[in-house]
Image (cartoon, rainbow, N blue to C red; front, side):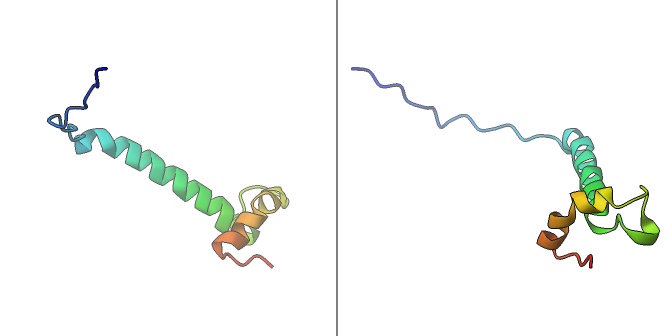
Length: 69
């Protein structure tokens, strides 16, 4: 019976910051958009008419501690 061993001599190559930065900016923008819709999309700052977005993210608002009523 033969066993195959994993070589511990190989190390993971570090990822350069210039390759991570665009993805970090993209993730940050997605986070800010989600935060806007969950936390601010209501009342005077509303982009969309009606309460559809508010009702869609209503439970998320309470989960994250945003007051809404």
